[in-house]
Image 1 (cartoon, rainbow, N blue to C red):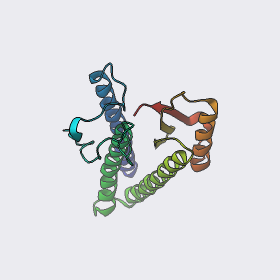
Image 2 (image 1 turned 180 degrees about the vertical axis):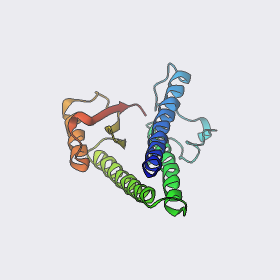
Image 3 (image 1 turned 30 degrees about the horizontal axis):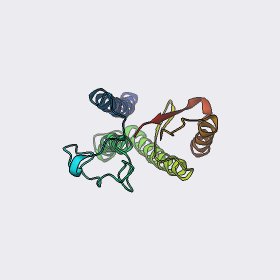
Image 4 (image 1 turned 90 degrees about the vertical axis):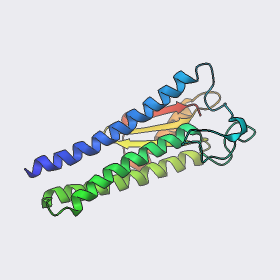
Length: 189
């Protein structure tokens, strides 16, 4: 019985993370299909008005087409989706911890899962900050059981081997994950 509850909690966490990744991917695919013929990140809002709740709080675009001092649309929405999935999973785990009906083993597993989420959150933030410090415009990292995915603003001349090596080294130093389990993706805007 205890094993079943622990497995149910772990399965729920994995399910929420997978749903968040799928929704993020699906959202990006919808944008690509709607804006066929446009280059992502180069559209400017007319009058600075939008109905998109993800972009509503961002300042008007700067001269170069990006909002001054903020992340671009994809990176902001990816961070938001990641945070919403984490908040949902964390809520479930805290509910398990605070429940009188939960067995001690389930509570211990929930506590361990919360610690893992916290460690992943810190590592992702550290990776993102270090990649941006190396001169890349923006970055978002996703840590999962299967490895680490890092989405970095695409460079004008594309990613060179030195760029991939630099980012891989940052991820390996921060997480201890081998290079074979690190995926680096260039994203437009």
